[in-house]
Amino acid sequence: MREAIRATKPGIYEYQIAALAEFFFKWDGAMGPAYFPVVGSGPNSCILHYHINARRTEAGDMVVMDFGPDYQYYHADITRSFPVTGVFTPEQAKVYQTVLESQKAALRAVRPGASFRSIGEVARDIIVSKGYGQYWRHSVSHYIGMSTHDVGSIELLEPGVVITIEPGIYIAEKKLGVRIEDTVLVTKEGCEVLSNDVPKEIQEIERLMADKTGVFPR
Image 1 (tube, rainbow, N blue to C red):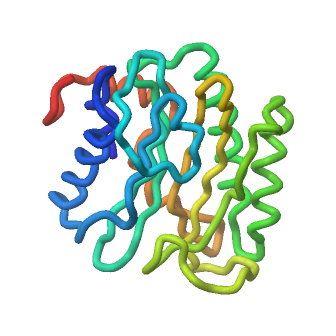
Image 2 (image 1 turned 180 degrees about the horizontal axis):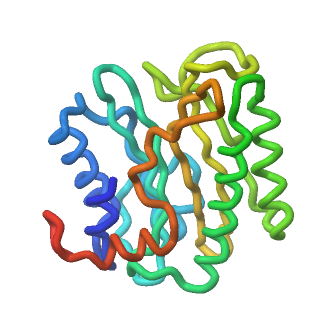
């Protein structure tokens, strides 16, 4: 995921971003992708389960990349959002930071005894408080394991359960979508973010995308 983000620049196709991520999934030992990649740029960033991945990116676009590997039959589900140019505009940064604050609040709410509903309410409250409530379009969590949307009745969380945390804002009229998703293990004390190595702070993303020392130079 990091290499795909780092290699993104205006003019790259959505399918090329997906291909880079899949290459490194397999290079690092995954059996393959856990699910068909979602790489939506510009207007496609606001389509929740977009999968055509055929658009050529343009300067000013945000990209929503929702993708994860299948490693020894266990799935990861990760979403990162980033600007094609490598630098957030003020508006992109404002929306992105709202989603990030929402996700962090939801992660703090993950603990044994919590419910999907209570976690979702915490995340949504942040987005509503920032004035983006009308752009909230989906729930925040689902089970994940040997299937990306794993089976099981909706129960209070307990240690050992693995879920996702994925708030988002989708402003279609501005072609601006942002979703941030991590794969999360519920522990006795709270939770462990298993996908934490993929950067999500604005400065971290901009620093990664400015780096020209990777396998695929920008």
